[in-house]
Length: 484
Image (cartoon, rainbow, N blue to C red; front, side, top):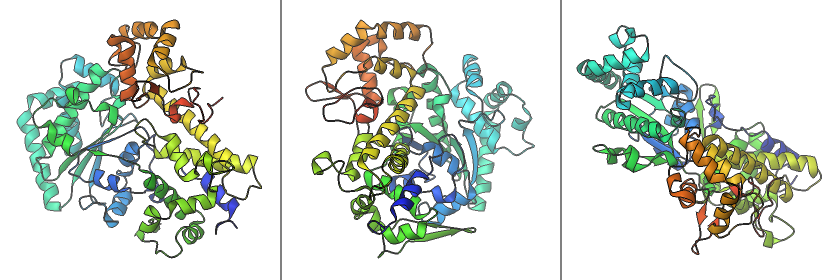
């Protein structure tokens, strides 16, 4: 036993934590943890939800499709407008569903034919809301459906009004979910209009009592000059909610998983022996929620019981509780729960393999390697979202930050990085290319800053947060060593 919890049991529990639901699989009830900012995001009257990669957008897009999850959220008191009776449909998502919404290629075809994105999304809304005998249901393909909607505006308005009245009489809501909008186009020229049209329709539906749209977008997809230049756009933007994960909520998620896991009772006793663990019963499942004192006051103490007090042989190396999130944050300090949990899973596995007799569940060297692994994953995600970032950062391998931007520009010029990238952009061969590349190296620097990859110091030098620096093999004096 160690600090009240068995060392090997804790390692196993940490190694078995779920990886998340980024690819649309439905979460289990015991995976549902609700930070305060997320509770606000689930409110029906907040149609726009934003967040960094891995913040939980796809998790909630998927979770809200499950009646049991909606029941859990409603019973927990997190939302007064959401429950198991809410009728939920999909307006766009990662997985192809051509009968429910157009694919990227179909969207491209429709926009090339001059169909406004607002009409395209209005068609999706109408098709999902219409009963089986409605004329919109008789249109087989999306071009015919959009033409019908464009030519019959009053019929569609009456459909919306009648269905709204039906849901109002039932005392429930109709919710249409949109996610993975980065997959709706390969360039900003088409993505921005698609997002703009969707936000217009989200605003239109706010005038109804029971019809709602909820749009999950990455933070970098909200450029107000591009997507919010329509009347009353401020009403949508003002109600937007960012999925934040402050440090106490990251650890709250950890406690939630441990307390609801295989040895949940023992972890509950270890983590908060003097506090009651509230629970919500849904069907045959009982889900415990983290008591407030553990979410706010005792986290550091309990985590150090499992990981030790220091990141080395003494306090000068830092403290695990703060060290992990500090080394996983972007330039704004934002940490995705996916990266946080992966670092802990890898640290637990590495400790069991490399330091099986260590007296704590986690060894500090294993924590460092867990952060390295999480960094590699974060880099892979960045590469998937913006392939051009990989091109410009790989060329900086071996450099030490912070450094003068002139050194970075010189490296780019010496290796011809920006010239090749410019040629690929001109040939439309780059997915979501840097929007300021026409301004040369300084423009690319600004794009990297907007993605929270580069950070501009007060003396104008460039710094890169560890979560990206380590994965791309850059050095920093006294920092985590780059991944091999």
